Amino acid sequence: MAIILFKNPLLATMNPAREVWRGDLLVRGDRIVEINQPGQSNFSGKIDRTIDAGRWLILPGFIQTHIHLCQTLFRNQAEDLPLLDWLRRRIWPFEAAHDAASMRLAARLGIAELLAGGTTTILDMGSVRHYDVVLEELEKWGLRAAGGKCMIDTGAGVPPGLLEKTAGSLQESQQLYKTWHGAANGRLRYAFAPRFSLSCTERLLREVGAMARELGCMIHTHAAEAAEEEALLQEKKYRSIDFFREMGIAGEHCCFAHGVQVNAREIAGLAQDRTAITHCPSSNAKLASGMAPILKMRQAGVRLGIGADGAACNNRLDIFSEMRLAGLLQKLQHGAIALSAQAIVEMATIDGARCLNWDDEIGSLEIGKKADLIAIDLDTPHAYPQNRENIYAQIVYAAKSSDVRLTMVDGRICYERGEIGNMDINATLAAAEIEWKKLLHRAQITG
Ligand SMILES: [Zn+2]
Image (cartoon, rainbow, N blue to C red; front, side, top):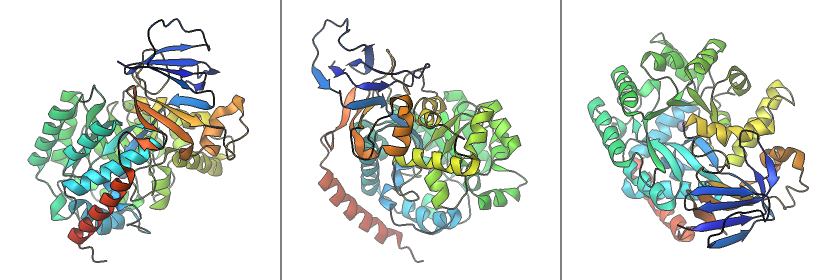
């Protein structure tokens, strides 16, 4: 069990008192075991590695509560389309054309980008097939994740390769849950992932709702993203938040991506039943879906996380871009003091952990919690000088993902000095290029 000492960093703990101070942090195995004033450690055992962290700000690792690792190969390949066209003309045909090899490279690229950019935990929605491959890659490279295969059993424009039989979809999800939930020292958790209201039958959703409650498992889906989605659902006399609740998909174990098209009544309902919302500002802007009312949701007490969504609609998986845009959009809409930088960092750390019901283990630097942390070098021309009184503004508005120097998950250093473990980055990029070309050939996109 390795013992690692981070010596003398500035610590933005995100603990309940939101303490920011200079100290030493000791990791033993997968846990934070000491946080002390510099030189005040009581630890008497042998330290395997001491890292001089005096230049660094150490934070709990960032948590992105909506990601599609399966879409990383589609980066820069699905431009200038609104949501439903983007899905039907590009993303669904691409996803249908995935094989195990292309899925592996999509996941690997995404994981590399996330770890190098300071993200330590994701809530991931897969494609319909090959989710076991995504989980294998997560297990291998060390990112913490909840996630699941996407479930689709109906819907206009869904290609045959993605359309499942209801029973088969449930069965496969259950099998993945059995194999993977709690795997990798508890670092991987399964989440049921029905795609969205227009691509799932009521039977599928009701059974997912019941099964998740029975198993104590999360549900992750998209809801209230675009106006066209709400308009189509209106034919069934529903709005999407109400629809999911009617299907038994609401509550503390549920996390919905987007929540752009929510009204005051729905916001009150989300706060009351504790359903979490993931804010995806870049994706919502790029697909022209709109601006989620996150200030109103926060004021109402809705649990909020933040995420990049997929590389096919962003085109980054960069938490720094998401935090910055989230802050800027709220300022434009509600005024300069609308949403503090601290509130945004909370969404990306401790509040994200709460959305995943994982805040007992991650989301803050506290003794006994998992050693999921990142080191940022703030002594850079673009981030200097520091303002210790508001370190959060420096993180949200000045820092960049390239300032991340080290990423630790579960006590394991997954990224350091530009290296993702023993991953050969150049070989990964070359293989990704080959797999993308093969996938594009299989997909035969026509317009
Ligand atoms: Zn999404």
